[in-house]
Length: 346
Image (cartoon, rainbow, N blue to C red; front, side):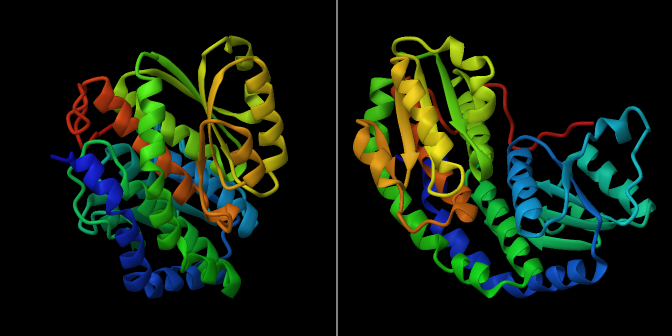
């Protein structure tokens, strides 16, 4: 019998399709508001998996919409009572459940300062949806697994759709149409992932390396493996990896690298070659044929996958790897120890 986590991984193409059919008009309306209000900066409050979605938003809104983005420090509001000046900004709360008190507190303070506020959540009746002026409902359906899969990619899609609608760029909006197809193809790597999981079943540590738009993917894959497999797993930017952490690589050290065609690809290719030279065991998630053909453990993705949308797709192999590592190590992916579906932090 398949776990809820596996079932929900496979629901993601349909979730993506449903969002684009049902929510584009609402997102386009928020885009119109942003074009009219012209926020001078964006501050995003999130925790856990949603924090990784916020990293994607940080790259996307900065690159496509040319607005500087920062990640909020909720404790400045909840513990220190020293919230920064949020006037003329957009403050975004991202939360699957919409219940975390610290995210709510940031949005409430933003409303007190007359900042523009937005909630991105899978629960339209949640506290953060009640306090934000604008809501994007991710519409992923109930997620039974403790470890997030479909709610994460739905958050990424909501962010990507908002960025494209805010820019009002028809080419970017057209790119969104094919995301569901890309996800379907990505699910086809499951057998290859099972092989990697079996070969890495005795490992107790792992590094995940990405760069640019896919830095968020390295963080999310690392988090999923920590949650379900209890491995000492760390994510890195390829640039930061060179500044010290690469020294830990030795014969057989497992590394996942994410290399998607685009401006970051040349540096990621160089990083991959450096990792290979140190005799680490590397698995590469890529849509670059040169990379795919060079390596034993390559996880191929669609060649026409746009880099700016790729994190919605590149995380799929990481979710499948977390699932399969848990299974080969004898863990229940639906009941990770010491975790619950809703976590409330102050």
